[in-house]
Amino acid sequence: MTKAITFPKQFSEEMVGIGVAVSGRYIMSCSAANQLVVWDLKGAVLATVDTCLLHTYRAKVSPCGRFVVASGFAPDVRVWEVVFARTGEFKQVSRAFQLAGHTSGVYDFSFSSDSTRMATVSKDGSWKVFNTNIEFEKGEDPHLLMTGKYNGSGSAHLALSPNGEVVAIASGPSLSLYSALSGVCDKVIDNIYPSGSITRVLFDSAGDHVLTAGEKHVRVFHNVTGRRTAIASARLRLSMANNSAATKERLEGIISTAETFLKSLKEPLVTKAK
Image 1: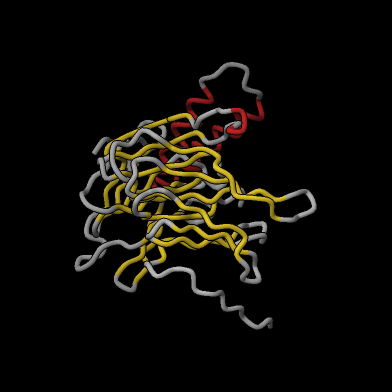
Image 2: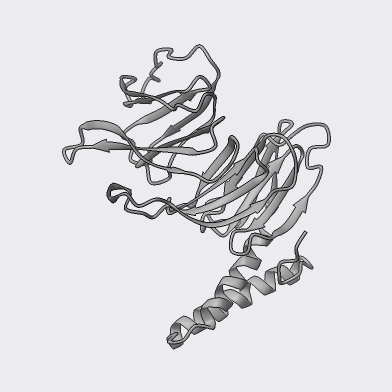
């Protein structure tokens, strides 16, 4: 077992984000005072970035490991690319793009598993989903795919399902699940923690379950909204022309499996607006 490395202290303010790139090339940490630091795995500082958010609420590393991202008091989400040479040597942290459209600070954000979708939730009471599979080097901006209003007031935590079809937003002790395909609130689970608030929400890697943390407990729920969006998405693709027999069979299998699961829980097969 390798001895642990203690990194030098960088912040006097609260740390609001930490993450390790999937490539293992760097670690990111960020303070509420807008200082985002990129480290190598030996504890040497590779770069320091001012998030320019007035007050930073969240900072994360993208699942692909290519980007570091921060949100805060400003109404946009800032995204930087961590650039390495082909030889593996660190080059720079450069501004990539931003997610715009909110009118107030962004409480939280999340990624799909392949980093091609991002979701945000704002103090303005709205959430948004963006297509981030873009050529930002050529000046292309993220494309807004869906926006909606979220239930609750005050600070919120957000998670985007691995396939980018479900948005989970926790506000206080309650969790709301939204279809990223229609923008509709599909399900609300109230009072998960009766005497406290949800402090974290996320999906498992398969997207089958949504988890919440709070009051020293983790609660695990079936992602029934994800089953309903799977049915809607598969039916839409079935309605398109030129599906091969194999594709048609696969889509029908997705629908059948999802419907069987929902029926076993006595859940409706289609989204009902809340």
